[in-house]
Amino acid sequence: MRRAAIILGGLAALGALTAVLLSLINDGAAQFEVAGERMVVAGNLTLLSTERIEVLAEQHPEITTVTLGEIDPASDPQSMMEKALLIRSLDLNTEVAPGVTLTPGAMLLFLGGTGRRLGDGAGLSVSDWQTSVGPASLLDPQHPAHQERRRHMEVLLGDAALYDFSLAAAPVGAAHILSADEIARFGLTTGETR
Image: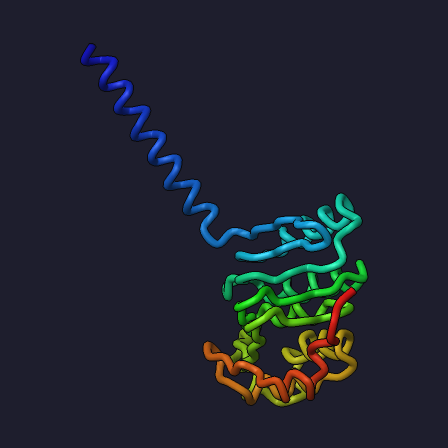
């Protein structure tokens, strides 16, 4: 009887440990959900999650819009730009979920939408960013570190004005929430999406 109690106690402890480990693994992990014509994306997006977006879009041709929820600020900016270009190539819209303000890194993803809109109470933010040699705003404008992000905005918005504005808007680690006038000035929303 005592042996059975020890075994059951050990199994219970193992089950609890497994639950804790799973919660740690999933904490902030990328989340994807298809709801009708929308693919809802949230969490920590990495280069690996790009394939998930592509597969879901193939499996659900009814998807027209990628809705961005709370995107983890630790998400890789390189993967954001990659996903944005994928979203554009798939001719999908992007929208920010109601009440969510996208971090500067997640803004790179939002720009990929063919049509772009904000849900009620949603916002967009920008800031300077950290390069391997210091804040981007302190580098010469022709420094190679600027090329990839500047080109990203040129491809998706038609010019790099937002990039240059972002460098001065807020320091690394902070964020400037764009006003309605700034959103209009940079053409960040396109009105209603299909």
